[in-house]
Image (cartoon, rainbow, N blue to C red; front, side, top):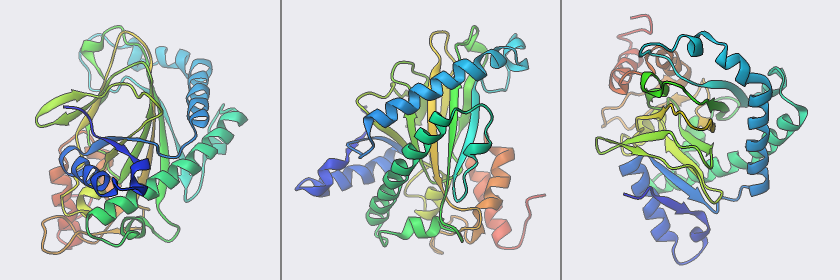
Length: 303
């Protein structure tokens, strides 16, 4: 099975209906897909990857291999074999507060995110249209007082001497909305669960962006667009790069699905994140049930 590829250049011509149908099928049946001709500048994407790799080599690699995670890899363990940090972009940025980032990387990352948000908003419009909603429905639903929340997890998955003992990143679904991934061109490791089997996601080629949908889009779409379990496998050869940007609801955004469906109603995304923080690597079903009880006044995050 080939991973769906959505060519956004086809939206302007006679193939628009076919492209929209392909996107709808990818969201309904896969929960992940690749996007090409997305409008992001290739030189900018290449520069981001180059600068992030340089930052890891200069500032993070040595400390990772000196960490307890790396030194303690003797038996199977429930940790993630990754070196990562998180950048907030919207509604407020923390990029100037992150230690040892070069001014060049800060500037290039800001330029990249500006273009990537345009892609995220375009995808949100197309998904809204496919669901029979107003084109701005997802963006409006995700917007709190200051608009949607956007942040990027910058990660390297270093070479691992005992990959059979640990995951690069354990199995989970993503808490938020639309996730846009700029990933390694050479080193594999990402896997998504499809029809009960783990499907290997090959390294990105030809300037593509890999996209997957998160828990809040599943709720908003009444379960039509599923968030999908995924993981990163540790490997002996090569250090894998992952730059995953999350186009998420604001913390104060109120998330709901239609009343006739079984998904939870009228909860704040920040409350979902509090629960997600302690249950990320567990099944999402109990999280949805807990949020229904909280929204109905029959439960709390402390229960």
